[in-house]
Length: 465
Figure 1: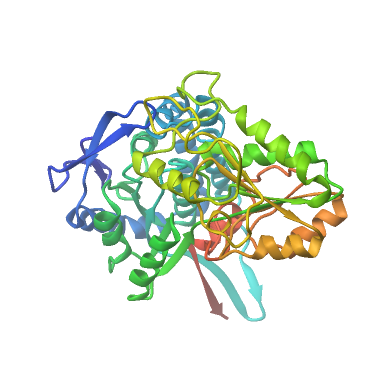
Figure 2 (figure 1 turned 90 degrees about the vertical axis):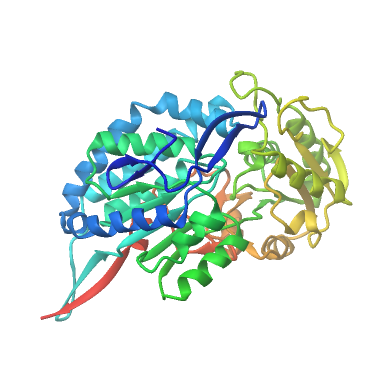
């Protein structure tokens, strides 16, 4: 049904016959076309969501949990197809497409079905009953790098809270959103509760962000676009939740297990071909471990084989588009730091938007390489001499989304507490899909995942008795 939009519980023809090509970034071949939606399509979808809101919001949360449970079941049966679709439209190696790009959003959906099945009891403060009610109609605008996970973090939480949703996925990776819409239809979600409108940011995204009947805009993407959405929503005093860029630091203290810290740190930086907002793209290493870390990072990164995402030996797929490849290579070519592996002249497959895993050492903490979000397989290594200096370098960023610290437990925890960032992993702590996710500074506003993510889509009301 990729020639249609999903609005009001039906597959409907778009207002325009214009379409957007979807490319396989590993082969540069067109694999599909989707509607280039218009403001008229957004109007129809928002109207459907508004009409469905009272009925959906009026259901007990445990009833909404039942719908989410069915949605999880319908989506789970499509897991293999989801992974393959993401491999095709995004270029993620199949292992990553299956375990991370598919497994994680299913876990997030499961978590919201479970949260909704066990709603928190009403709070009493003196003579006031404090209740949580859904915000209303939500416009969800999502990125291309994790095309189902970033959708699920918004849609599952919003539906659990009692909101209705209009989803605008990235035009670069829209196909997996169609699988979600098919699953929603099969699960029997009431008409208008979930709506899908494909199209470009300047048209569909802007129409959603500025729509007078959209109560909240939840956006994941660039800081520049987040700034535009904030302004559009501010004109009508609408709520926004923004998950934006990052330039995360991986701090390796003098008493760290350097081998483990570097290998896991390189893997984190290169995950999804470096197209991860939380990627530890700055590796900060104590002087005593620095030379060893640089050599190990270079060797580890060079071992990431590039190629066909569906070849089991591939560890690094392409970046998402020719424009993204040009952008990443621009940063690499302008860099003045010491190149230790990769670079613009490193061999890559002749076809596809591939960038070799690239590591720079002796990077100036204030340079473009250390300050800008490159969003490609590029790692910067920076030396430091003390814990205080490491904290200063790590916090020398307009971003504050994630990070890592390695060292003896208490020391590493003390440094982690000083980092101005929304999440920090200590000694390789695993990602927790139930914990709040979001950023400080220009990395965003609000939180996703778990109960904190649910609260983003709720209003708080005090009823005095």
